[in-house]
Image (cartoon, rainbow over all chains, first blue to last red; front, side):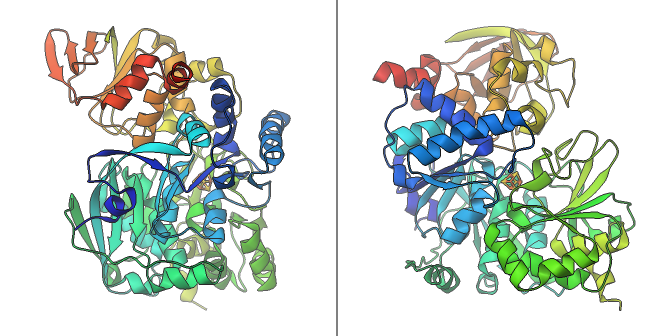
Length: 406
Length: 156
Ligand code: SF4
C-alpha cells in the first residue's frame, strides 16, 4: 500500500531515487541564475529541450533596464533553442502550466517554490533551485528523496462565504510553517469531489508554506474532465490506505473566512477578530488566487460598489484576463475603481506595480506575508478573494458578510 | 571534512526573503548578495559573516527557491549552517553550491568556537558535543567536490 509520492517516484519513503523529469520550468526570476550555472557547466546540450519551459512572470514587463538586460539574455536563449517560452504578459508560470495541463503521475520540477501547485493534477510537482535545474536541463533527470506523507482529510462542504483559500489557511495553521518539512501532503476525504480544479490548485499552492515538498490530490473525474477539455487523456488514481507520518481532519463546513497575520503564514485568525484594521491597499491575484473563478468572485463582490482603498487586480494569465474581458468582469472592476495590471506576479514579491511603503498595510490574496515581502516596512495580511473584496469596499479588514448588505 | 568557525546564533523560521531580500535579486553580482545578506533581519550582520558558523533555530531557509540565499551566505564567508531543520529547497541549494549544512539540535552561544566533522556528523560547541543527522552519500559527494558544477566538471 503506497502513498502517491511512492507510486510516482517508484521508491519507498525515505529512499533516494534518480528519476527523469517530465517537465522542467524556470521563470525570469530563477532562469537567469539557471542559465549562469548551465554556462558554468560548459553549456552542455539540453537532454530533453521539449520538456523545458521558460516563463516571464516575476518582473514582467521589466521595471528597469537592469532587469531588461537580464531578461534579454534569457529570452534569446529560449527563442534560439526553440524552448516553450512565454514572454511578458503571458502570465504566471504555475498558472500557464496548469492551463496547458499536467498529467497525473508526471514528475514536474520548477525553479520556484510554488511548483507544488501542480500537485492538483496528481503529479509529483516540486520546487528546486538554479543548480538543480541547470543539471536537469543537461541530464533530463535528478535525484529525489521519497518523502513521507501527511494526509489531510477534508469532510463537509464549504459554507457560503468560505473558499478553498480558507481551507488552505486552515490546514496551514494546523500544521505550522515547518509541520510538513521534507514531507508530502495528500489531500483526501469525502469533500474532494466537491473541490474543482481551481480550488485544488489553490490548496496545493500553499503546501510549501508548511515546509512540504509537494501537495497532491489524486486524479479523479474532475481532473479527467479538465484535461479532456485540453485534449489530454488522464489515468485516474485510486487512493489506497498507506503508512503516513501524520494526518489532519478538517471539517470544511466549520471553516469561516480566515486571515494570516504578518509576518507568519501560520498565524491564522478568523477575519472577525481583525475586522476594522485599516488598510492602504488590496491586492487580488498571484498563483494562489488569480484565476478566472477568483476574478468572477471579486466582480460579484464589487458589482455596483466603489473600492475605498487602492485595489490592484492582476489576472494570473492572459487567458484569465481575456475571459474576464469577455465576461464583462474587467468593466465591472474598472467601474468599481480597481487598477488592473498585466498578467504576472505583480507586486507579490515586492518588485513593482504595487510595492508598499513604510508603515503601509496590504490585504492580499497571495501566499506569503514575510517581513518586507511587498516592500520595506509594509505589512501583508493574507486572505481569500471574498475577504479581499469586502475589505476593499470598507477600506479596512472586513468579512465577506458585509457584501450581503444591500 | 573538518570545519571551524565562530558561532552566530539566529532564531527559528528564518526565511529566504530575510536571508536575501527580493529587491536584490535582479543582478548577477554575488558580492552584492553577500553584502546585503540578512539586511532585513539585522543590517549589521553581513559584516560579521566571514568565518562564521550560523547556528539557527528550526526551518532555516524556508520560503522561496532563490538560490541567491545560499550563494549570499557562501560569498559572505559563512563556513557552515547548523539548524534542527531546513527549508528543503534551501537545503538542496546550499549543498549544490558547496555550503555545508548540518541538521542538529544544539545550543548556541554567540561568538563561541564551533568545530564540525562533516563526514562523522559531529558538532562541538565550546566542549559540548552534538551529533547531527548524517548527510546522504550523494550530498557528501557534491559538498566534497565543492558544489554541483564542480562535480559535473570533474565527472566529464
Ligand atoms: S505570484 Fe507570487 S508566489 Fe506566485 S510565483 Fe509569482 S511571486 Fe511567486
